[in-house]
Length: 239
Image (tube, rainbow, N blue to C red; front, side):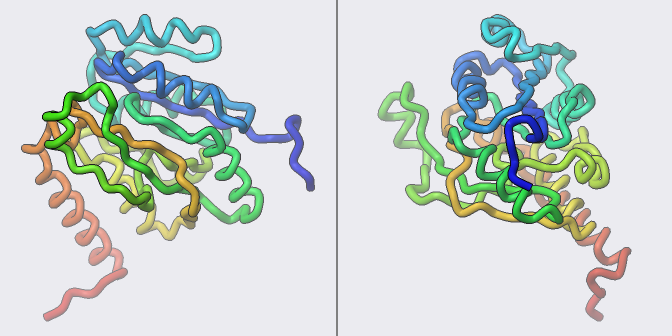
């Protein structure tokens, strides 16, 4: 069947924000500029105090705004999923930018292979232009694009997300890594587009830079995945 505008599936785009007003408008604009339609855009304000709400409300009624007390990134994404009406879900961090054809390319991949659960794309990182030269010199920015196994490049069927389960909320960082490993343990089918889907902004307030002390979360996440795989018989203990 040839896909038309009338029979395209709705994609719900969830943008969590916590004190991210500096870059939030660019993130929203990159979603509204998508060549794929129909979409709904949901911003979950996770307890911001910097006026992020005023940025979002400039885009009303094209963008829906919801506030919750600060509960963390995983909880904000889960809240967005609960509110979403689409059969497909997508996520974008408030400081990153989508390429305009991202959703069009990903939904075409689903149409070509209906057995897919989720589709990723490549990432091109960039240093935020407002930083001064000293700040820029302290940030490593890879020149080449790379496969983006992160929430911001993913589109997933709603039914597949429900099957995999919600994001865990007790991780300070790494909640998507935990979710992705759990999904792969359930043999969910994914595809990586060769094209760039996301421009990831590097700046002084990136969570990975700001929360260096929480990087041990990644070790615990990987260990938890290994323990689950051993318990299910996916891997054997070596004695």
